[in-house]
Length: 129
Image (cartoon, rainbow, N blue to C red):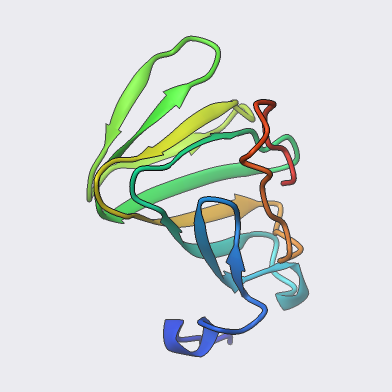
């Protein structure tokens, strides 16, 4: 059984500045589970072009407001508390946090190594994952 508290992760190597926010990684590959679980904060006012070529990701919003936009179709969806979205086809997408931080609980399959970050300064899809 694995038990972790957010307060025990903050400030450790599992508290990763991913590009436009922080990813607090509760479960990673080293935990010997097939998926990762993160508590991710997306900084208010940020837009991130992301693409996970090696992982499927599902996110559930627990606070804040934002949007997710499909990079190929420009179809956009509001993200508010209680909203789930899944990137089930390695979809390139824009993740946009509006006027307040967006907080998401995310699952990655397969598990993250734990040190992955994005280069959000690039106009190319960030695919460190």
